[in-house]
Image (tube, rainbow, N blue to C red; front, side, top):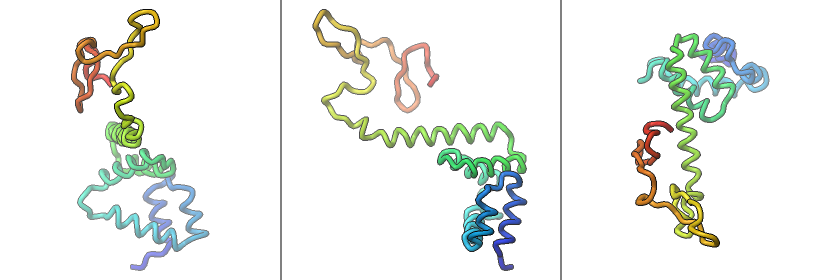
Length: 165
């Protein structure tokens, strides 16, 4: 069966309903070949009989759309998720995962900032008051800080806040 841009548009309307991005009908009108290619790419990435079920694929695409800031794709995948009956808890978990992915990206981009070298106090060292008039501030160290408690991934946080981020 040959796929035409009209069939792709019809399938996307059925699949996404009100979540259909505004660009899709415009593509059908102004660049039908590009819409046809988009439909082929969708079928390649989200095959009916793939290793992942339809709900999982939708949640992955929703998470990526959230993390990359694609508002039209978030809207489309939200409508798709509703149509598939994906529970609110799964959608919120997807949001948390996407948020963590973005936080990881921010930390990864911070390498130049974090790799400042020995001339700066180590991150995590607190500068506390002055030892006396005209004296430079002194750094705290693990030996003179308040008792610390471990956090996941080796982080440290003051007692009384264990497990809170």
